[in-house]
Image 1 (cartoon, rainbow, N blue to C red):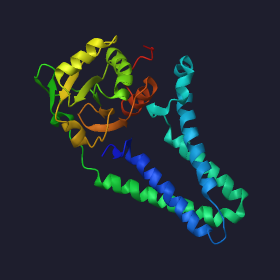
Image 2: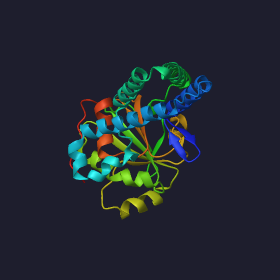
Image 3: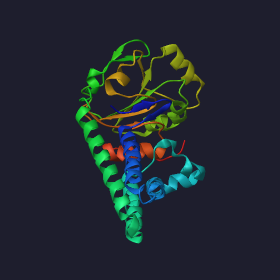
Length: 276
């Protein structure tokens, strides 16, 4: 399962588990502290806020040269540009600060944090246990726009596959990033796997764009999303040279978040940083 749909929201298992753990911690803190009227909610909220802020700042710092070209993008978090480790460290430091400075809160805060960590650990473990083995890319059907079957198994190159549709606004916004990647990638195949639309619809959209898109394929029955557990679009999938799924990105990509994913999953890959 790559993502979970909750009403109009699409979240990853990591975010889902984190949210559940956070509210479990709040509940535990409220139950322990209600007799002494000790509130732990402000502390937990500060930990969350500073954790998210630190995770974003750390990511922006890695690609500050790119972000300074369009500074407003620093606060555009739709690209999912966060460094989890930085956020976790910041949240822990905030918790330690309050734990040290406010002895009366230690019991309540300790109970809340212990509960949150327990729920997060159990939830993460369950997702890993229940996660079915994803299919190899060679097992996933594809059609070229001409209707001919296509298979990416055995090519010996990593593949980045983007699940998208022409009616999906974030899909359209990230298309220039993927077009740039297709032009500058030297060791990776970038393919665009359309979900449920016809070749005519895709060609009509592509012909209206000022950028060039290549490697367009059809998945009209949505097999890719169903078998890989992608609950929404856009979803970007990272397959190694053997066709095995090694990572994914749920939501819109920016040039920076794509580069970050490539560095993580394919350290030897190269993607030009030139802005489109």
